Image (cartoon, one colour):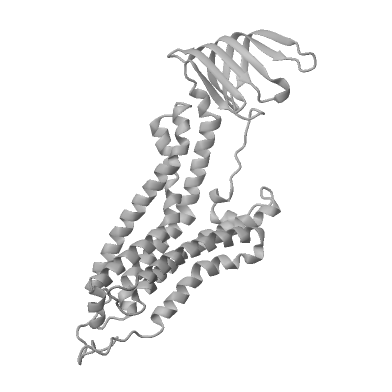
Length: 382
C-alpha cells in the first residue's frame, strides 16, 4: 500500500511551480528593463539634438521590449529552475521527496510546467508581438528621422535634418512663422546650395514636410567657373525630406514580416538571393521557443541526475551553465550558416529540440531507485 495517494497536481507541484513562476516574472522583467536601459541610450541623441519629447522617446524605445523578452525568456527559465532546484537540494527537500517515493519525473513536473508556459509565451511573442513591435519601431524611427524632425526646428540651433541637409532658424513665433532662415542643402552633390530667407513657414506637402520661404536668395557655386551665382526670390518652396529625391520608401526586412510572408515571400518584392534569409528567419521563430524546454531539461539533469552531495555538485552546475552558453553560441552559428547554405536549415530544428530530448532520455529513461539505507518497508519505490 502506498504511503499517500497522488493527485494530478500535488502540493509539492503547486509549491514549487508558484516559486518558479514568481522568480521567472521577476528575473525576466528585471533583465529586460536592464537591457532596455542600456539599448535606449543610443536614442538619446533624438532627445538632445532634435528636441524629441520624453513621451515619444519612451514610446519609441518601449517597442524594443518584446524583442528583448523573447530572447531572454528561455535563459531566465533555465536560471530560475537551476537556482530553485539547487536550493531544494541544499535544503534536503529533494531528498525528503525521494524518500517519500517521488521519481525524477515527479520532481521535475513543476519545472516542466514552467517550461510549457515559457514555450507558449515564446511562440506568442515570436509569431505575433515581436514582428508587429519591430515594424512599428522601424516605422516610428523612420518618421522621426525623415519627417517629424522637420517640425522640431529650434531657435538659434543648427538642426541636422540629415547628414547633408541642415536648417538654422533665428526665431520661431507661436503661430509657427520662422524668421532668419539659413538652409545648407547638399543633398545633390552637383548642386550644393546655401539658401537665406527673411521669413518662412513649415507646411505639409504631398511628399512630406516643406518650408515655404519668403524674400530670400539662393547661392550656388558654379564648379566649372568657380563663380558664385545668386538668385533672389520673393517666394520659394524647399522639400525637407532627408533623402536626395524628396521622397523615400522604407523597405521592410525579415524581422518585421509575418510568418506567412517569410515562408512564402512575394517574388515581385523579394530577390531570389534573399529567400533563404526569409526561410531562416521563419525557422528561427518556430524553433527558438523549444530552447526553453531544452534549457529546462539541462537544468533538471544537472540537479536531479546522481545523488545528493554535501560539498559536491558544483562542477555539474558549472557544466550546465557552460552547456547553455554553448547552445546559444551554436544557435547563432547555425542560423548564420543556414542563411548562406540552405541545406543546413534542418540543423536549426535539431539544435533547438535535440538537446532537450537527449537530456530527458538520460534523466527519465531509467526509474530512479532509493539508496539501500533509505528503503523501508511500506515506502515503496517510484
